Amino acid sequence: MNTLKNFDFKNKIALVRVDFNVPLDDKSNITDTTRIDLGVKTIRYIIKNGGKCVVMSHLGRPRGLGFEKKFSLVHILKYFSKIFNQEIPLVKDFFNKEFNIENYLHDSNIVLLENLRFYSEEKENDKYFSKNLASMGDIYVNNAFGTCHRKHSSTYGIIKYINKYCIGDLVEEEIKNIEKVLYDNKKPFTAILGGSKVSDKINVIKRLIDLVDNIIIGGAMANTFLKANGVCVGKSLFEEDKLDIALQLQENARKKNVKIHLPVDFICAKSLYDNVTEVFDVKSIPSNYSCYDIGNKTVILFEKIILKSKKIIWNGPMGVFEIDKFSAGTFNICDMVASSTHKGTFSLVGGGDSVASVKINNKEKNISFISTGGGALLEYIANGSLPSLELIKS
Ligand code: ADP
Ligand code: MG
Image 1 (cartoon, helix red, strand yellow):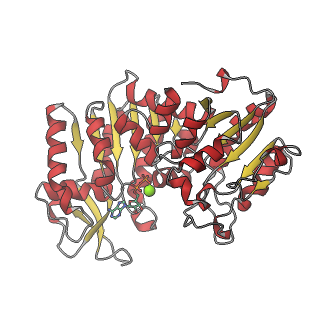
Image 2 (cartoon, protein in one colour):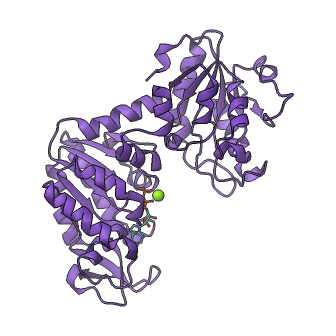
Image 3 (cartoon, helix red, strand yellow):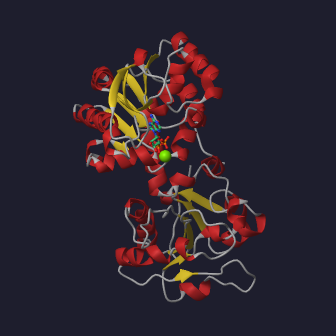
């Protein structure tokens, strides 16, 4: 796959797809700048090598019916401009015949296009929208790992209409580290999976069974597995229509000598907002209770496996960690992955909520690699590549 090094950017216009989809508070202030901070190295490289950058991104989930103030990239403009110590223009209304990007590039070597998803054509991978984007530059650079699994105009369609294309440094770094965790010859290899749904992650589990020695399962996902094994999970969240698949995955794992580790106790409550919590062994969950976090015995059980592992991939929290009283399981796992990493284990964490839990715990520096991809990471694991990257390869 071509990288930045394969092109001479001097006097060229680069179309850089970034993922500046940062979280904003209700006053539209950025609450976490990570995605911008990680994305700008590629832009800096292109500028340093004498090129100009047309930067494009999406932000949030606009309806695709035109401008919506809440989702305007104007909210990130100040921060973005400050990084480069120059005023970066925000380019609006760029999908029309009269539009000419050169008008904006006279005064600034970096310009930012307004939220791509103000146009429904972006997500529809519309031919004319893709062509319009492609016509603005000479070299397309995809530096938005988190959206590489989307077949949108700016990540996919555009590549058909431009001759030169490559990945940016962030995407290169993601691929290197994901490949490392999946394929480096270090054992035991443990996958820790959690979150709310099995359905999001079936193909990932299927693929991981070919690669890992252990799969630790927590979160509501564990409820589905336990239920499939005849355990009463009370009122806990589980997926009725995924019980068969859970058993099938267990059987696949058994055949391949992969151990699936399920929780043995839970922190439960009658409802999420009930102040009274109780711990129950997996065999004695009352029918009017729900499991919201893994219990202490489970933490100790999982700890043994995590500390013995040489490679770890973690996606999905162990419980409803957003609520204090159900956060201990997830935070304990976070600590253990950090301790294991300290002893030389290679660890990779991905997924919006999992990464958030690492950040709350201040453990970002204690994990080998933190992926910026949620869905993209899962799809990369499941399929060995991503649609946008396949086109860039070809
Ligand atoms: P990630 O963003 O890291 O990929 P997911 O989005 O798959 O993770 O899952 C995170 C969500 O799963 C969180 O909102 C969390 O509250 C929820 N969750 C975890 N455990 C449970 C549980 N036992 N019951 C209900 N929801 C849960
Ligand atoms: Mg999530």
